[in-house]
Picture 1 (cartoon, one colour):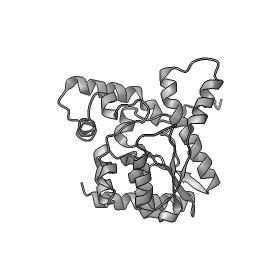
Picture 2 (cartoon, helix red, strand yellow):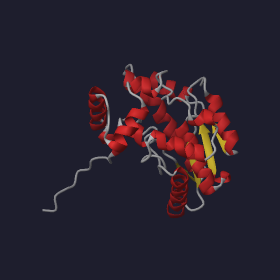
Picture 3 (tube, helix red, strand yellow):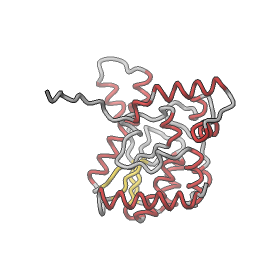
Picture 4 (cartoon, one colour):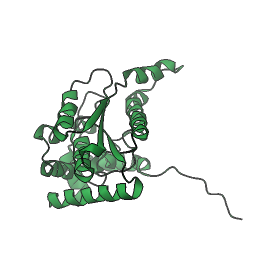
Length: 241
């Protein structure tokens, strides 16, 4: 793939989006220090200029790898805010009259992060970037109304391999582009949680080819179970009769 052309086309798309949906607005991006937020931020800087890109770092208490987020902000020269969400997360948990399920506990922080991004965005004439990629979305590896939300999404039709390719063309530090993907919630990498590599998943998405039958069945099951995350809210349509 011609990653320079892919990057140039994406930059042009971002510019068009802002011309049509917020001329003069700023791009607001949650910075995790991984490749997706790094590439999204770098694309927005090229499309809009660094003065119109705001990075938001949102640790939940102590974040061991927050140095990666700081590295990106410094590398791009963008304005940033650090908002620790620990008190907000714990406040919700303590206010509930029942214990959260494991899945709810995992999904609560990203949903509070998204609320934080919109608070920053609406206070700074912004549009919130969705940083999910196709590979994650394919198997439901995003939190609905958490990291799966946003106003525009540069990467949602690109696989992990393709995002990495653009990151290299954009001149991002290798440590950010090649950082092992992690949800930052379970203490495991994405591939540990999924049970297969993104390389295998990307190949299957793009070509339909896969070597392991059980892995294919698992991917297909995850994809089918999580399709609802990629669709709009089902709406009742009253009869015209």
